[in-house]
Picture 1 (cartoon, rainbow, N blue to C red):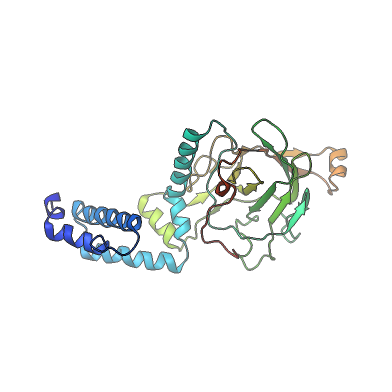
Picture 2: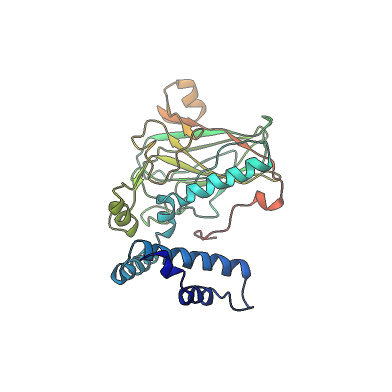
Length: 308
């Protein structure tokens, strides 16, 4: 049908009433957003001649998506979370000339309140025979000065691509730690090299991606929150160079400046210094934080997270 149907008074009156625009109660901004959303949905239905059966199929899909708790996964897979990052960067670029470490998506698998250690800690519980990883780096400001006392919150998958808490076979807070940087802004952890993973093959996110002709795989990566008083909270993650999905991440999280090079270490002196048993892989990544202009910039955004 043509847009003349959408523009009929009866339809426009329905959309206004549904969005509460005829009422003095409620939140005006929220009502305007809902009105735009309903108008766009109804226009799409009309433009593509969506049948009633197709509409209810979509509603049933949302039921399944919520039941499997994959809404955040789908938001990443459709590029919406990456879009939010790009938009926020554009806003901040117009307000400040400081440029720090790029942000990228948080993803849906963070768990709050991981154990906190000063300077260094071990992240794995020793039950996964994955390759030992020594992850380390520095946190600095845009002038290159170390940021002492910054909290580097780290989480990543095991060798099967699974995360503790969501994978009941793993111990509590396995591969999850918070490290407080030392006086030189340094942090380090002993862990294991993570594996990439794919969306649950029987889940609604992968079902939608299949209809789009897309895969649901992610490269090996490590998540970070980095925060310190007076600085903007940073949500980021690094991808490990050499992964086949490095530039084909279904979640669009790979970005220039966020790729780390794994390096094999077989120097006996360095191995002894790190108190490791033998050859391992080191991954170095340094963070640059920007000064916060407002107090709320020091905090991570509010969203549903485990144990928070």
